[in-house]
Length: 144
Image (cartoon, rainbow, N blue to C red; front, side, top):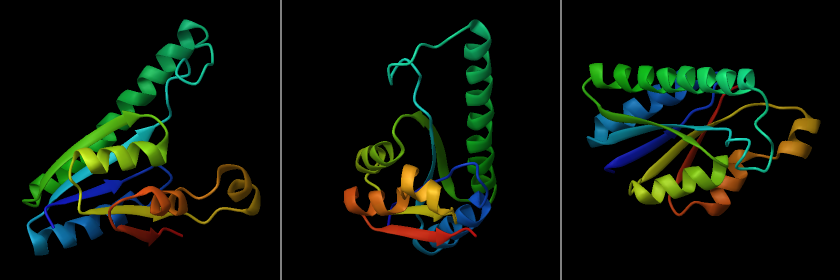
């Protein structure tokens, strides 16, 4: 197992995912790719960007997300694990699948949050969609 992709969101539980990836990487000498898929640019999905304040807010948000991804990769490197971080804008499942193929990933690790009926109805399950589309094994960690 050479490459592990850990997909994190910022709803909590990323430390659990990183710890599990670290445990596996130590056993197999794997490299860990920490990825966060940010919401796509509004223009990409056909929405006007809006005033400059909206663009500034989005840029600040992306910088913060990037710093968080880099924080996790730095933690792993300090433990002697090869790690790189990626912040990519796009559709979550499709982006994870595309990156897993580009990076020749052997395992994808994601978390599953407990959500209510309405969330499930409108947003669906990222993990179920990922399992359907992925060409590599997916480890799903319950996050509460």
